[in-house]
Length: 136
Length: 119
Length: 98
Image 1 (cartoon, rainbow over the protein chains, first blue to last red):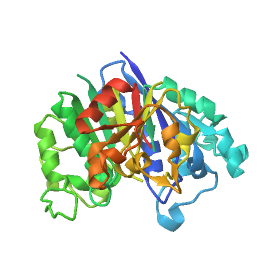
Image 2: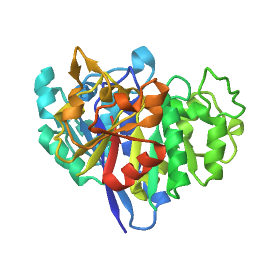
Image 3: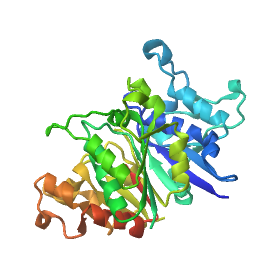
Image 4: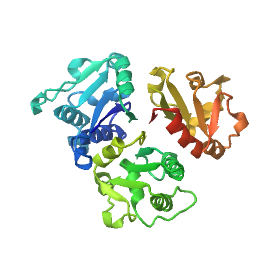
């Protein structure tokens, strides 16, 4: 029985490329990985947004109307809904002039988890504590 | 010996990163390591069989078959693959098709994980 | 944490590496990242070379680009794919691709 902690670090903005979205969908699959593991084994992702990666989780996105695809905001909300720890770099929020009230929550979906705004040093600590680090 | 799990997202043609991933996988397998390859994003196009190797383009099929003969497990993201119009019946034999949790399960057993993003 | 970071570009589109502390970091130069080991743009070497003493470059990617081993900065250890596998398993606790 073992839990493997993984740090998913999103460092690129969304939409032009797909890796940032794939970071979230891959992290979300921790919910079903147990079907392929021994009893008691788990994978626990922490999802961290740094640099331009933080631009993709602002509230009020609508990618369905123009492009017919789910928004990154929706994926971020789904991550909160499944109780994933989601972190956003405080220094990058300040750098891009983004305030906490511009970040989404998933209260409307019934989620209790909130996005954590933390200094980069804490994200480094998450990387240290994780067994594996995956940059997207 | 260790377990190396790699997530490969870049496409076969147009990115040298895909070639890098396959070469590294082969070198690790040759040294006796267990290697798992997960294809997502544009890398999934490379599971289509009957690729013609032209020397101006990277080739995947020949190396993927060789890797599997060496015991490397290769799995493609089913959603990414079918979204690109490739069906399972068109796939290179013995490549696995599964959902993203396959990758996480191979991360669980890995000593090292190298996630190669697509940009 | 002994993290080996793979750098595959010469011009980095992300600044994550700049912000990470160098003491437990290693840098593996692959693909176009190998130019960091050779070029002196405007007469200045790449800042990455001062980031950590643990620097590696992939010989096959140097060769592909017509770069000779003697052009590589002395601080950078040139390894082939087989050597890189050993670096991944023996020199770092975890690895990441920028």
